[in-house]
Length: 349
Image (cartoon, rainbow, N blue to C red; front, side, top):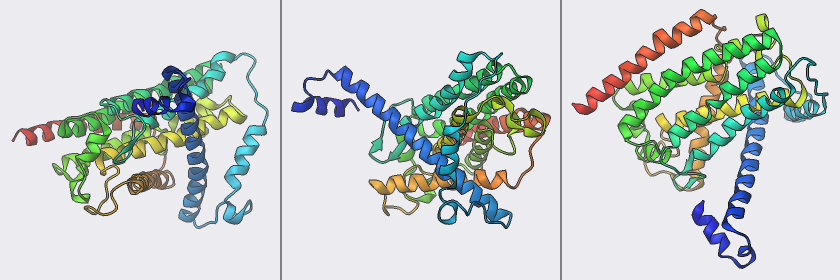
């Protein structure tokens, strides 16, 4: 990005602008781009989830608005934008407004660090993995703030559930990521993708069998829990908490929570693809592996993992709170340490 700004600054029509101002302009444009990507991703993913669930349950899904219901999600978005925004009288109004935008900002900022193709990344820096793991953790603060600021017991309990769940599952997810970082010796996403270039047999999910495969399953389950997706959707459990931490939200602010949820699904799917499934590399050695094709392969791998998120939602029942914590602390975390130990000993041997 610095090279691009320097090049633009050397042009005649931009030479009067300072590099700092150009940097600010690019930051604003980049934020707008990522926000647009999140909005479009939510529109597509909601429609896809409705259709996937319909196919699994032998029904049609939305069919009335637009051809095959294609415009139904857009109509829902317009409806949410036009609905009245209600803030409870006893709520902390500033924090009540702040929480949705904080939960929206976290996945939006994470998009910048991902490598979308061999030579295409918005921010190719050496601590990309650490950055994404850190920035996405802000969502737990936003959810807890939303629950507390609503001054509602169901919202508060939902926020506390979410905090306990996300913090608990960040540990096995981080340990599973560490298994990959050990092997590649880098926190740079592009270096990790380059280490897997050369075909499907070089993807990290197959190496040091079965440790990397187990680490991928652990990462997948842990990130599923961090996204509050079924069977880990206890913070939004309508059967006992009305709607959890966003009970008191309506209209546009309510929709932001779901924009962020689908954006988090996309982020964790792309991160999983980058860490274990070759990133932008083609499954066939040397076949359509450069330029826009890298973006296509990366997107297809992410789309497949998102599809499995939807598949599990309409297949598995919700866990109880004790089962949720048992899975994190007594199953996934010990197996994560076992994977680190197994890969470490294998590498030394």
